[in-house]
Amino acid sequence: MKHLLAAVFAVSLLLAGCLGIGEAPNNFVEVTPNPNIEVVQFTTPDNWTLTGFYFKPIGPINKSVVLLHQLGADKSSWGDLPATFQYSGIGVLVVDQRGHGDSFINGRKKSYSTFGPDDFQKMVDDGEAFATFFKERRPNDEIYFVGASIGANVALNYAARDKNLSGVVMLSPGIDYRGIATTGTISQYGSRPLLLIASKGDEYSTLSAKQLSEKSPSTRTTLQVVEGSAHGTNLLNANPELKRTLGQWIVRN
Image (cartoon, rainbow, N blue to C red):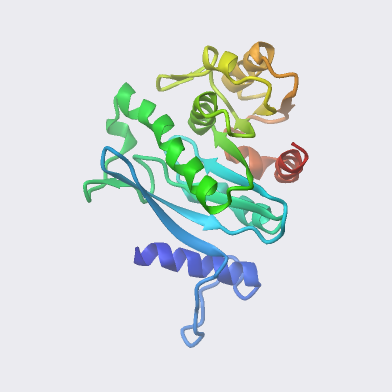
């Protein structure tokens, strides 16, 4: 937990403009947590502990977002997107999925590299705890799931179960990632807004996004194919304008 709190302190300084990227904090500066960022943990029925940061919204938009990273990454892969959303008035929960980052089971680390198909499917089950977090903390908010790569597939599959979600954003979706498939699930998504983003050079994700767009029952489905070959959250680094695109799409929908 100490290194989690240290990460929150660092984010606090960066947001306050006191610490430049790559600079070490002065040892004589008293560092205090950012009251607008909270460390949260979730315990699953099968004894996983999943850790995240809750970025409390600064503004009255009444929109909340859960960010789900790609395979082999962690919550830090979203960069400054959580803070960008936060200062736009959007509440953000960014979490480490099971087998990644600061997640552990029965007090021990376990890597996704040891997972079988059932383990990956349970990532979808974990979505309930994340959605419930906002339903309890901010019951008047509309809730969106934003996922990257396998996180995108997880987001769609959970949304197919939970009709109370307001929308989903899928960065670099796949027809099937580690057994979490989407072409069958998309038919259960209904009329809610859906945003699909992939890069031209990422052929599998582009093909998958196009197929999902064609199969989507929602008339509010938007497909955006950008230049380059970036995948997952790397799309945001290669195309910084996408951060504004995501924020505007969530606010409008």
